[in-house]
Image (cartoon, rainbow, N blue to C red; front, side):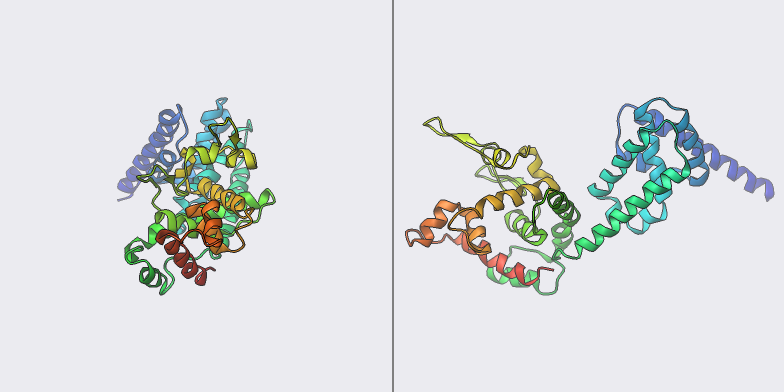
Amino acid sequence: MRYHYSKIVRESLFDDVYYENMLVESLNEGFNINEVKKFVSKIKDKKHSGQNLLKKFNKSANSNTKKIIGAALILIVLGNFVTKNNKWASSNEFHKQVEKYAIELAEHSEITTENIKTVANKIIEIEEVTITEKRHVFSLNSKGLIEEVNEVVPGRLSAEKIKQYDKYDAAIVAACKNLKAKGETPDANIIKGMMLIETGMNPTKNHLGFEGFPQTKKHIINGWTDKKGTFHPGINQKYKTNFTIEDMYDAEKSAEFIYYYMKGLEKSKYVNTLEDAVIAYNWGTGNLGKYKNGKEKLPNESKKYVAMMKILQKYFS
């Protein structure tokens, strides 16, 4: 029995060494956090492997190898935390944090276990802040919300898609944190509301060519030149940003874009309320002006947008 147990331990350690080596060898061409997580999940004695990987890190002179090992060490130290917070740990925000700190570790010729623990604690602190801030973003799981929306816009939302509707809250919170760091004043609830109304949190390209979470086009992002040769600046020119049309399929970047786009709408003399901003977002400030001056009727789509936002506002955290 004693021999059998010893044999199992030796085989387990052998497997762990195999995965440790495979981790570095197979990923040395590039960094992929999901692949790193797969290898780490296969290691049984994480404490022992952590010590081996730490030695490999300190012996290596290759920055990419150090980055990969650093990410693995961070994941090993986080251990139970990742298991208990699986939803957050599978998010882009988590991946970005691990990669960010793995890069920082890779800049050191040698590190200690304490260095890794310090980094892991920073990530946990960020997660706790994120959870706290996410409580300030309305959830589609709120009792009565979906039913109310479907009363004014039949079939618009589905109770079966609540996870999809709330899937990007962390990304929206992260975008708001980025914006606040630049001195901006974003409202995560409004941003999420617009993303939800536009796409149901399913970014796509519609039949008119509008794309992503914000449902926008390249010329709105990068500006355009009219027939007279006059250039009309886009969001990038107005706010010194560098958005691309591809970014419109990234929830965090889209959230930032929506903030800047709505900030531009608010400069119009016709936009005085959130209702005005929602109409302008859907129909344009020029048409909003015609509507306010009694020259145009409000289209049904804009009416639906306004009705939906009014209901969502009741559930804003």
